[in-house]
Amino acid sequence: DALAYINQLEARVPKWISVKDRVPNPSTYVIALTAPGALSVGQNVIVADYIHPKSEDHGVFVIAYTNYDDKDIVPVTHWMPLPQPPEEYDLLYGEE
Image 1: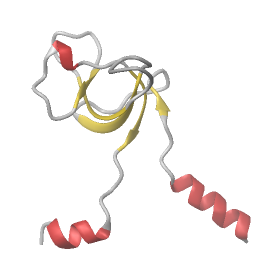
Image 2 (image 1 turned 45 degrees about the horizontal axis):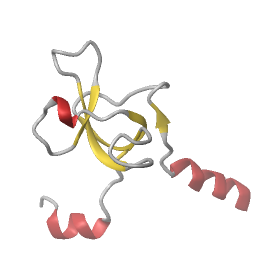
Image 3 (image 1 turned 90 degrees about the vertical axis):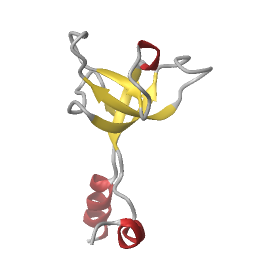
Image 4 (image 1 turned 180 degrees about the horizontal axis):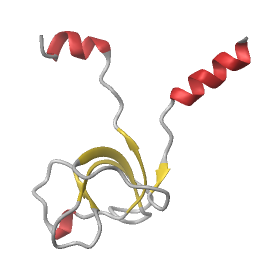
C-alpha cells in the first residue's frame, strides 16, 4: 500500500532532536543547529563534536575539528546524526 510505503520512507529520514529531549553520546560528531546569534545573525547549521570535558558538569558541543577551547563551545538547540556517506564514497575511499 502506498501510504505504508510513504510512512516507511519518512521514518528513515533523520529528524532534529532537541537538546532538551536528549543529547548524543560523548565524542560523537553531529549536525547541530546553533542558538540564534551564536555564530552570527540567525541560526547556523554546523558540524559539532559533543564532548564531556572534565571541567564541565555536563557535556558541551564544540565546533568540529578545532582544538578544544572555551571559544569553540557553541550553544546548540537541536542536533541530528551525521548521514552515512553515499555508496560511491565507500567504493572509492572505503576500506577493502
